[in-house]
Image (spheres, rainbow, N blue to C red):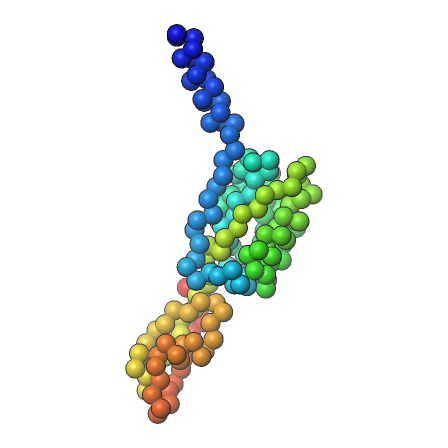
Length: 165
């Protein structure tokens, strides 16, 4: 009975250690949509695995640089930048998979989510019902800020502060 119990514990531990782990890509920005186009300073939540085993250094959040490129390291070495500007998450997934393919024997499985869309502040003052500071997502237009502010017919003054939040 003792040997059976030890064997069961050993097999269970072995299964836990060797089983593929899947990192969740759950930290998604609430403003992210399937058609959201990536750009500079967007943050992506990546989970990359090969043959069901997570590549730990590739399972985390990554910020795109000021050119909208993703910089990844494999075994401590930076691979060529992956340009993701103007691509949706689905298109970015394909680009990342293609870029990583030469580094692995099997095709990597890429799971991706937009973790954070850059924001900027718009300060609306003047003849408006809801004046003040509004936080807008990266792709927002001036028209969006005006719609939120409910302008009166008298005209408004708009100040745009473009510092990233």
